[in-house]
Image (tube, rainbow, N blue to C red):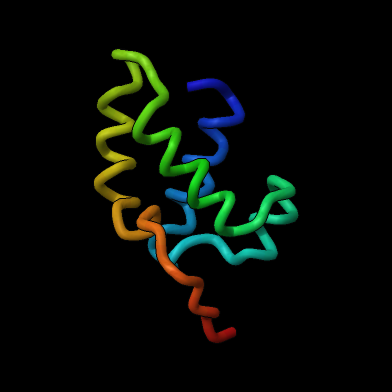
Length: 78
């Protein structure tokens, strides 16, 4: 995993207890939409990494399982 990919995963993990990061924060931090963010996180967790970071990716896959599933966006109440 490179630095940018790690930043995406770290951001997703940070916000996971709250249902994931708000779309405004994703746009500000990474310049992409929430659906693009979810797709990138999912792709990184499935395809990227080395043997060294595999334990971390396994943990992140387990924690972010429901967040990274493709779905229609339901706005969160503010």
